[in-house]
Amino acid sequence: MDTPAFVQWCRQAAPYIHAFRGRTFVIALGGEVVRDGRFSTLTYDINLLASLGVRLVVVHGARPQIDARVQEKGLELDYHKGVRVTDSVTLECAMQAIGQVRVEIESMLSMAMANSPMANADIRVSAGNFITAQPMGVRDGIDLQYTGEVRKVDTTALNYRLDDGELVLLSTLGYSPTGEIFNLTLEDVATSAAIALKADKLLFMFGHDGVVDLAGELLHELTALEADQFLAAHPEVNEDIRLYLPCAARAVRRGVKRAHLINHSLDGALLMELFTHDGVGTMVSRESLETLREATIDDVGGMLLLIEPLEDAGVLVFRGRELIEREIHRYSVLEHDGKIVGCVAIHPFADSRMAEMACLVIHPEYRDEDRGAQLLHHVEQRARSLGMTKLFALTTRTSHWFVERGFAQASIDDLPIEKKRLYNYQRRSKVFIKSLKS
Image: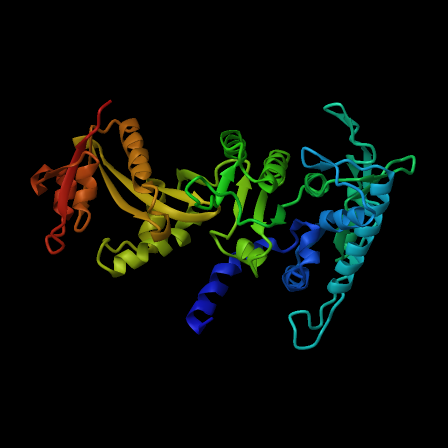
C-alpha cells in the first residue's frame, strides 16, 4: 500500500476503531477454516481486534472433522435438512473432533512469535460449559437423537470473562442439567450467544462472498425483512446462505445491532468488513441504515466534508461553518450508517410564496440510486408544508438534472425580490423554477 492510500485507510478506519472499543463481537467460523489452514492468518486479525479493546466470543464448528471421523468408522453421513442426525457413535466422533479443533484454535491464539502480527500478543482464551442444551427431538418424523439446540446461555459467566479481558471460545457441544451431551449447530450457538450477550456484531465467516443477486452482484446491505424476501424469492440459493441468513435476520430482530456474512477465504476479509464503510460481505440490520432527517448542529462537520470540495471547485457558493450553523434549521441530511452522505437546504420567501432549494450535495460514492431526487422530494414536501407554491434553484452546472425533474428555466426577474437583490451576476447562475402541486 502506498503512503497516500495508507493514510486514507487509517483516516477511514479511525471512527470504527473508536466506536468498537468495549463492544462485543461474536465471530462464528466453521471447522473448514481450521482444516484448510486459514485460521492461523485469521488469528492475526482477531489479535488486532483484541488489542483494540473489542470483547470477543469465537464460536467454532467442526463439521468436516466430524464427517471424517464418522467415515473412518465406515458409517454413512446422516443429515436431515442440513442438520446432522447424531446417534451415540456419531456423538463420540463429534466430541473427539470438536476437542481437537478447540485445542488447535487455542494453540494458534497462544502464539506470540517475534516478527509476526502476533508479536507480544497476550490473548487469554476461556472455554467451558457456558451453553445449556436440550434435545432437538423428532423433526418431520426423524429422531435427531443427540442433536440438540441451545436452551440457555450463561451470560453472567461469559461477561465475567469478557470483562476480565479474555477471549471466550465456544464449541458446538452443549450440556443438559442432567449431564447429557448434545451436538449443536454452529449457527444456533453463535446466534443464541449473540442475542443473549446483546452483542454489537454477529459475524458468520463462511465460504462465499455474501448474499449475491441473480446478476451476480454482491448485496452489501439487507434489512431483516429484505433477507426474508430474498430467501423466499430464491429457493435455489446455496445451503450456507439458507442456514446463516435467517440466523442473521433473527439476531438483529432480537437486539444484535448488526450481523455480517463474510468470505473466510479472502485474506483480511474480517478487517475489511469492519473497518471500511462498504465492507466486503453482506451486512444485515433490523431496519434501513439510511435515514433522511432534519440537520442538527452536530451534523455540521459531516456536511462541510461534503460541501467544501464543491465550494473549492466553484460549483457551490461559499457558505462557511458560521453561516451553516446559524441556518442549520433550514438543512436536512441523508445519513447512512452514521455517515452524512447528502444534504440540502430550503430558504422560504413568504411574500412571494416561493422557496429556494440550495446546497443539494450527494457524496460521490452514493450517487448511483438517485438520492438527489429523494432530497428534492423531501424539500418539495417541506415547501408545501410552509405554504409555498413554487420551488426554485440556481445552478451553473446541473441544468439538465433540474429540467429532467420538472423544473423550467426562468429569468432573474422571476425570482423573489429579496433573492433578486442578492443575485451574483459574476457567477451567472441559471434560474430554474418548479410549480408545486398541492
